[in-house]
Length: 182
Ligand code: NI
Image (cartoon, rainbow, N blue to C red; front, side, top):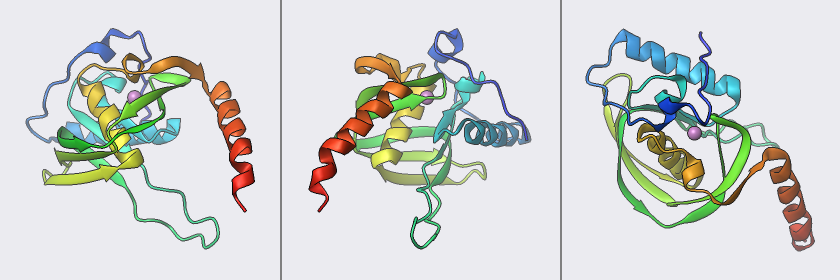
């Protein structure tokens, strides 16, 4: 297990385009394991290799929902290792707050497709086509952007705010919507 240093906004490596993985070696599998360790340690739902200083087209995503609060039932895992991911189709639109482990403690509104079809290879060299919606679609778009050297801050609508400010906004929204729950 290794937790890698996550590069932060302003680091030149985050602006570079990544190279395809040609052969899935033990070294590549090690990078993937370390990327998961690093992502979970930081409490993220996605991480791209350039964020840990490796200019290869590798992404890890885990958007598994929390267990059911009443039954404790574990949902189906939604964990994906994507090598050389390629977005084939997008449709719809979702507008919402987004953050990044390369800009800790900050969030901003980004509009993304609500539905994404992606092709990728996993660590066992199997190729998949996956369709994702909602948070998964957002994570796929965000992480694939990293492989092109694009940070979400380039796509933000309005200001980037601190997570404390975001909590305030969400609290206010919840209070405003509170009357409708009956
Ligand atoms: Ni990110």
